[in-house]
Image (cartoon, rainbow, N blue to C red; front, side):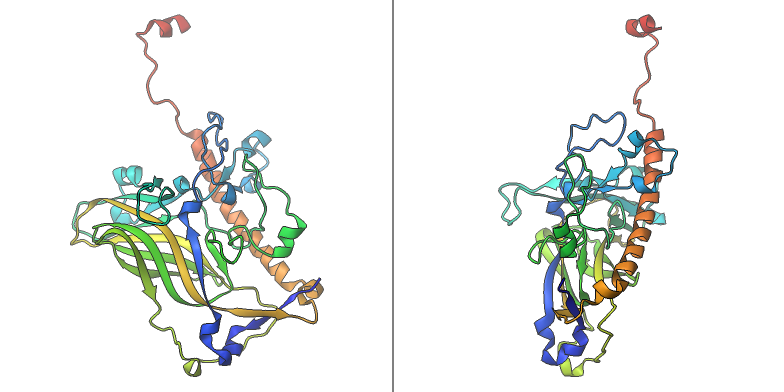
Length: 362
């Protein structure tokens, strides 16, 4: 099998930095609507769409032997917008705020003057405290998006199918884009220096600040200030890297070994909305369509005379270890939530002791 050689972009900068810059959609929330019905509990009849087929994940692999196969079949989740969470900081956390702050799929009007009219975007409600103190909320996915999960198709019940030879040969992972022109699902590979980040959002004249949260290959977690949401209507907020050097001759040239380096990636980890103590508290409503990045490619690819990875298998081994670690962390968290969901009371009202039907039943 013919393989590709991975060359450091830094070693090729003399050709010109702008030749390697690329724009990619890191995540597009219009692609995360519920399109399959997955049974999530014994009381669920499995008839209402509640998960996103493209991103559905089975976390039963982390469940212990005490669970039956019927219980493990219920252990699925996805990046469906209704599954995303709002994490409040300590000064904003109270019973009311925790209960009412949530994420929903929000329908855009068919008459809206935007290309995505009629689609569903991310809708967020955060209940900030009324008092004069700072507060913030993170809008995060239901699980840490794995960077090394192999790409496979899912059926209409949310069960992942075996990986085909074609899917394996493509080298793409589950949360990457299907092709170079499609939006990703939270993971973009081969990312070097990020030049710009953009967020398409609907402003509601709130004075709050917006940050984008990103992670990378080395486990670094960074936030990027996109601006304030004090405007009305759809707008593209942009962060430009103040330290980005456009002139090749002034850049520090670093040459890395060609092999074995895995492709560095950028991972979407959520949004953060900040409320200043001097600004109005209470309900915040926000809508988000997508997040895009412009970046330098970390590595170039060209034909290789020897199939290094077929011979040594170093990258495959490292990525398999990372994949196993990611799935263990993901599964443990979701299994604990499944247990908590199973213990929750389902009755909303008391059975009346005064009704005739109740008396006859006794």
